[in-house]
Length: 73
Image 1 (cartoon, rainbow, N blue to C red):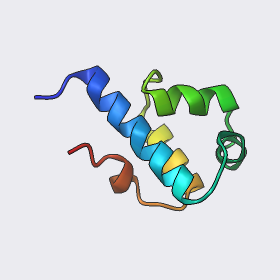
Image 2 (tube, rainbow, N blue to C red):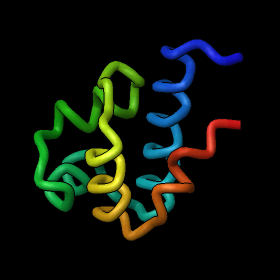
Image 3 (tube, rainbow, N blue to C red):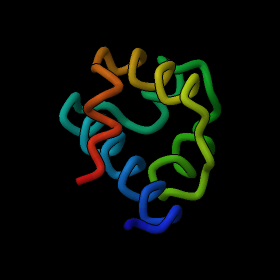
């Protein structure tokens, strides 16, 4: 069983990988998602607790399926 913090870090890493695949800076991603750059940094470091709604919104900003982000294995 995975620890809660480990899951947040893995989700954050998934967002970072997808953002980098698209050659986006954190600032560009934040603008697309209509959130502050600091928020993106916290998400990618696994420091921000995310609701399902926020995961979907961020995934939509990257034009990817939320399932990609939720793949924690």
